[in-house]
Length: 208
Image 1 (cartoon, rainbow, N blue to C red):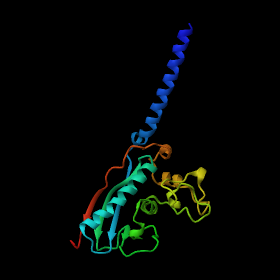
Image 2 (image 1 turned 60 degrees about the horizontal axis):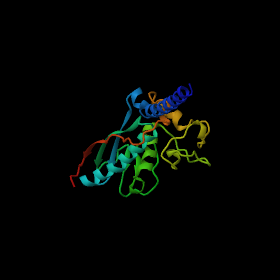
Image 3 (image 1 turned 180 degrees about the vertical axis):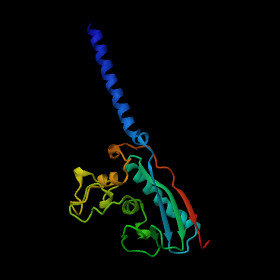
Image 4 (image 1 turned 45 degrees about the vertical axis):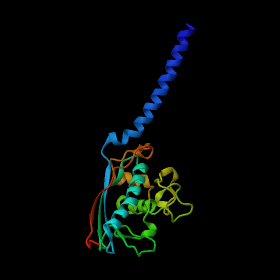
């Protein structure tokens, strides 16, 4: 009888451990199972006459920003397509090699080499495509929030400080505009996964 009880206890422990592993795996993949992700399209203009190699080099930080966005949203939001054109200034992200001030705005956002890296790009895409506000104007700022420029995540109700209290936290705002985004996407694990490669169309007007 004692042996039966020992075996039963071991079986229960083993079953609980298995369920924990299965639950963790389900959490990691559940966001994709519940619906297709949101893929963003972004138009990037480059003011100068750029070479094809220079234009392709601008894609690498965008792919890194897409990767960060993918992990921050449990794989539900990332950059799908990018149009890159030189000798233009009308892009959603308007890049210039000579721009050295702070990016600003929600459309036709001016950017330069100093800010063309994953966290700043993710922050500006938050304005451009996700309807998010700055979170760094009020002190202390939201912890671990890319809109406060101190991390790669998004703030939620429990940790939202924002520069104005009446504006909702980033996760509430995201779910207002992206209704397929599950509530648990902010907890989903995507470690070991990667955002799909950006599909880019490069228009080299000057053919430099």
